Image: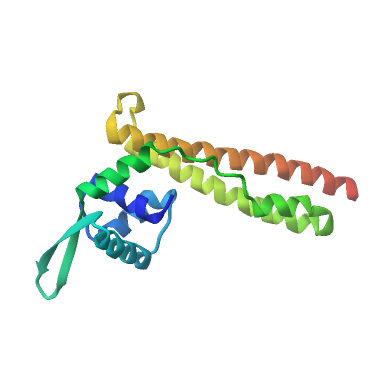
Length: 183
């Protein structure tokens, strides 16, 4: 996926300024696709040049005009085509996995420390996602349309984070067993 697609999705949900799109990335889309404000503004300029978005200048008191972007018909058509196109399975890439393959060359206690920190990060992400579930989707069976789609993406995040926590727990236990046997 390219940043262009994530911005088109954001604008399909509601028109907005570059700043508002950046805020949406921080609140929701950014958990699954990240971008800086600078990248967002640069991409909006390209999307406008390509005719995929339009904007309306809105006068502000004491501040420069702001541009409110809207998805164009061409942008909606591109988004539809992209959504319906096949998505390749992303191959697993894990720096931590490669490090574990070479654990015999390192200090197991330090590697365990890194794994515990990794687990804590994944658990914090999991708790954040579960909080979103609880606060924003209390009755998932009643969801339809955009809310259902957002919820299902969130569930993917929950499941991936839970899998990472579980893998870290398993790996920590295995390495701890190995460390205990060394002493």
